Amino acid sequence: MPPKMNPDAKNDDAARGPRLREIPLRLMVPNLITVLAICAGLTGIRLAFENRFELAVAMVLLAAFLDGIDGRVARALKATSKFGVQMDSLADIINFGVAPALVLYVFILDKVGSIGWIAALIYAIAAGLRLARFNVMAEREYKAKWQSEFFVGVPAPMGALLVLLPVYLGFLGLEGSRPIAYAATAYTVLIGYLLVSRLPVWSGKSETRVRRDLMLPVLLGVVLYVALLMSYTWEVLVVTTLAYLLVLPFSARAWQRRYGTLTIEDDHANV
Image (cartoon, rainbow, N blue to C red):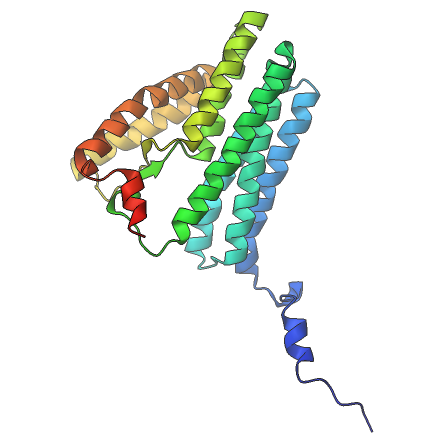
């Protein structure tokens, strides 16, 4: 007589999650993109330790690109999942926290010893805190009106692009002297602060639509930017970084004019 199966055994086995062959391919594609992003970030770290800094920065930028498309691919394939969200968060910590911090440290911050390492740690930890705050805010049932238009603090992918400014300048011929290394250390801490600050930052997710008569100029502008980026990569990244930093005060002012009757802290208190 065959042994009786425990009625809870099937549920206990299912609690371990589905087998690989049971997962549809369309659900795996976004996660594969996320894994590729992690590989790019980790490869950037390796290349930095091999003093191949241009390729290292390229890998971090590639990771940022892959991070930007994995969510869109998931939504297009109707393959969003809680597992994918957690994977994306872990990838972001590596790609936009750890990888840029180590690349920057090996490139210039190590010239000031422990002070440079502390700055790198501050930035990496700030990126992790920024991502944790974003996840908490995304899970809240109550969403303030301004959340469709503004982030709280500089987003982590943009933080990675900003913090590598000393590296871009180094590629353009700026000598990595000790005073420059101290300046880069202070700049790294500043970017870390911007990540965890309560500064309202325009997200670009506004529902405002581009007029039809402006569509062609906008498309041409994007094509021109990409062409310049391909031809004058480091110059364009320097200009992009400085332009973004200059826009931040205007972003905060725009938030104040539209939603200034409540502070961000007060808005959160309504949850």
